[in-house]
Each structure stands twice: as structure tokens, then as C-alpha cells.
Image 1: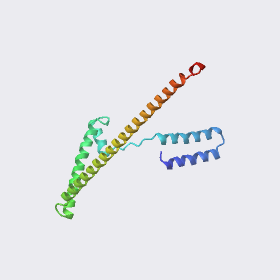
Image 2 (image 1 turned 90 degrees about the vertical axis):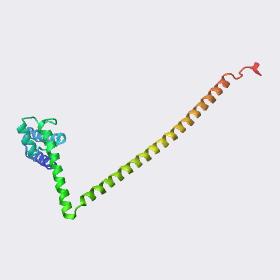
Image 3 (image 1 turned 135 degrees about the vertical axis):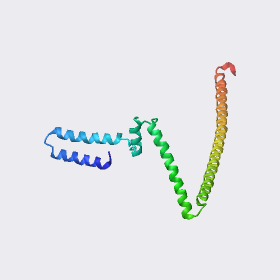
Image 4 (image 1 turned 30 degrees about the vertical axis):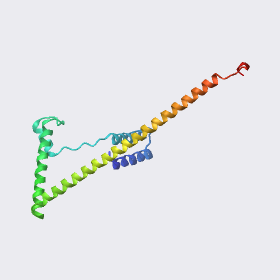
Length: 173
């Protein structure tokens, strides 16, 4: 449901509550409002079928699923129609701005694509290098921490051993 319909439903529910003579009428108005809200939340927009899709589906006598004949035929026909439209656009540009303009546009587009691809590779390489540096630093600090824990453990163990074997009787003196 769109926001306008939702606003109308809210207004209608308020009007029903103001003018209702019975609790059942108020409940029905509020129930209608909430059902419209739930419908708005659960509503998924599905692309409407084109005229060509409807005709193909009728003539092929199929369900119109993703792998049906009508859907595949529509995809192929649409792709070919788009290719023809693109070719007509190229001809119009060449006619209007001179022969070779489309070729120049294609070259510039290819250069820009290559440039973007090169930049993306450079960025990926820089990120990879930075990640490797971070991992090396993390490894270095984890080794240092492990050594410190080892030294502290050894010191505590030696300290406990000395404390456990201390002289507590008069004979030791």
C-alpha cells in the first residue's frame, strides 16, 4: 500500500472512532487500518508484464515462469530489439556529428574502462599490502606478548619454588 492509501485508512479509522455508536464498528475500523499496514509492509512490487510478454504467454500456453518458452522468447526478442535500437542510435550520432564519432566514443569508453580497471587493481594491491603489513605487525606483537607471558610464568614459577622451599625452621640458620 502506498503512503496516501495508508493516510486515508488512518483518517477513515479516526472518523469511524469519532462517529461509531458501537464498539464493534470501532474495532472493525482499527482492524482494517492494521491490515492495510501489514499489507503495505508485506507488499512486494512485481514488474508488470509487457504487452509482448502477455501475448507470448497466451500463444505459448505456458505459465510464464522464469524458464518458460514465453519468458525466454521475450528475453531474446528484447535483447535483439535493444541491439537494433543501439545501432540506430549509433547511425543517428554519426549522421548528426560526423562519421567516426561513434568509434571515437567507443575508444574513449574503452580507455576509461581500462583506466578504472587499472585503478581498481592498484587499490586492491594497496589494500592487500596494507593487510599484509598489519598481519606482520600483529604476528610480531603476538610473539612479543607470548614471550612476555612465558617470562612472567617462569618468574612466578621460580618465585613459587623459592617461596615453597624457604627456610621456616630454626635448623636452617
